[in-house]
Length: 214
Length: 122
Ligand SMILES: C[S@@+](CC[C@H](N)C(=O)[O-])C[C@H]1O[C@@H](n2cnc3c(N)ncnc32)[C@H](O)[C@@H]1O
Image (tube, rainbow over all chains, first blue to last red; front, side):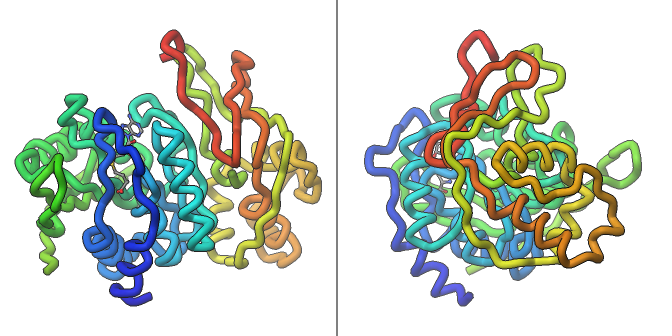
């Protein structure tokens, strides 16, 4: 699928009708969402034929983008049932078969190694301090290949450092900086975090890469 | 919810040591056709818990999967077709997932399991 086509389809889906500010419910716009998933697929091969989880999926934008790019199994997780209901309608409209689970990411437990890639636009923690890091820590436990995550630019060093030091990421790379026209955040970067297992005691090694997108 | 999702979920109640697999209570099952992808299935075979999948598919009324399976079966198209159907095409639409240790039920409505915990379970 072409990038423009993907962006067009994402632009047509229904978004939060009454966003809950406490849950930081703002959607990823079609421009950013399409590029984020397009990069994950075309530069890193982390989407098509993969098992992809969308953490804090809201109305499903990122997970649906993964489905449109050929992910084999997509699971959207969110704490809010109203968002999940909209996401599920969006999936039907796009004729995508996406799974959803209502849960709090913070205390969600999962069997490891099945999910290849986690994609997310987590709450930035402007309402609940540390929410972004809760998401990242769980994402890095669950993903066996990669995590693509949007973060506030001012937290970049902290996010990178913590992912590498405490969450067993093997690399943390800024793929691009994007300008969000949003009420809550004004600037965000896309991080790509790779966890891999170097030896049988699961020791993790790190590399840093950088990628710019217009 | 596909049984692949079920195969990853586990009860996350505080104090529960082995919350996997969740038992399935069925009210309604739906089937949705999915394109067959043999490579995906072969790759998944090593990752999923076979017995949990067999039991789950049986509770959903599908009893074609063999109780034991090994990688050599992946050469059989017949086996792959059944595996495909159980893993990806059977959906729990209404019912519940039950914690194997505590019996706590997590309801499933419109295909979406609610795994949210009560305050005293966190
Ligand atoms: C910034 S929005 C992103 C929505 C969607 N992924 C998108 O990109 O358009 C963050 C989402 O995380 C959800 N959320 C917030 N806290 C959560 C938690 N503790 N567990 C699960 N989901 C949560 C919100 O309901 C919201 O849908």
